[in-house]
Image (cartoon, rainbow over all chains, first blue to last red; front, side, top):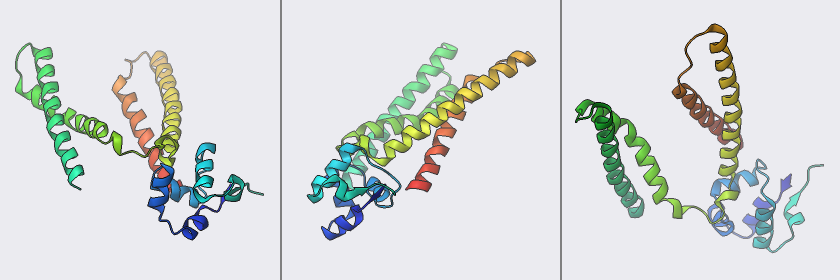
Length: 64
Length: 131
């Protein structure tokens, strides 16, 4: 799964630590999601989308 | 920083007390009296475990609100479930070997060490690969 978390976070001017705090997860989790190494649970995916005011499919897109 | 130092001081004090208690219980239970060698041995060997457990309890509140969704929790789940499967294989092989060869059973501590080392190695590999 691909995601635009890094771009959205940087556009919002947030650091990885701030983003992790806002999502209630560890900074390592944000790093792993941004690198595409970790696909989050649906509940976390919805919190990420809500944090940036977009829908889940605007953050995550399936691999072709 | 001060909070971390205080946590470690508390963990050190409580850990030392529990380690001394463990040593005392071991000394009395095994010899019926005070055996300084047993007290020190069990005390020293149990100290790191007590320190770890107490510091873990003290830092419970520092965890993120949704820690169960963190990538570290997934690594722990993957590492321990993989290690459990390895442990089943090791137990099966050891049991078969001792039955066939008629040798003494492998001590339980060997399997505990295998399981712990396996979990730690698997976690480290996942952290390296996906971190």
